Image (cartoon, rainbow, N blue to C red; front, top):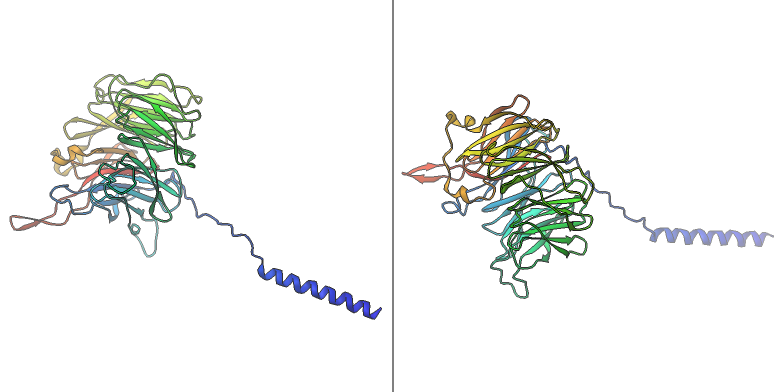
Length: 450
């Protein structure tokens, strides 16, 4: 009996030792917990991307300038690459990361916005700028992404001469975490002018201005699924918030794509003239379209998938001479139309989103020193985004960047009053008559809160 007890005891002791040994080799699975995604609707800043005279100051880097919505002031500046032409904001993550395409050195710059609070404060610095090198001769031109891990860039590749590389355009895939170009999606020969990724991240739509088509790219396989014929010379694309539709602005109107079936919906949206800009109101599901004859149209995009948005409003020709942009307020109360009625004399008009009544118009020249008109800057005429307009996330401000004016106009919506024109950063000094002159940089792109 005693021997049996000892045998049982030794057996249990052996099992306990084995379990201890197993415990030393066993590891719990590592579950990665993503960081705070932040709230993309509460970006309390505006970003102005500015450049230099591409001839006189081609070697001077451009800048990104951050304007605080609450304080109406420049809260930070950072140098980017030479010749910036386009920028976008990564839509997810609390870091508020911005990406900038630099045309004169074929790079993409990335940095983070200054946080709203920091220690010791009161003004927090913009993040450190990183440079992502693109292949020589690739000519990057456009950025877009709705993902947290990838940023997509259009590479035109007009003079790329690397061995075994296609000479046609590609869509480059930039890893957000590694800050490097990881892969390229080959496109047919042509000139891709714009692209948009669905909010669900499943597909990327690339508009080709030369061939008047849109390539549907699967973001998992990274292959072209379909090629869709659209209107002539597509230049802009937007996606609906529910990922059911894509709107492509062409020279004749807006082609609508059913993103669920990848089919072009019969008919198109038009104001009767050649479109000049397009904007989507996520609060009301309205699509706004301006044209070169000074008309603005509003369309109800809140229709069932596969349906064509219906017309809600069409202003008479000449209502907004030189209309070139629309900024819907996120609260859905009004939208602002940017127009250029006389050369570089910009005008901002407020329109009621419910009644479409034009409440008032404001000449932005009033915000210049002495109210003087802004003379045209020669090289600004070749800037793709010579003027841009956008609204802050809290609907309290409308911003207008002007290449010719050399800064960003700040407009307060609560009382429909201009605040002032915030100048872009100065360039390094240039000697004129033996004296240093600090010319101002000129805006080429604007990003506002969403």
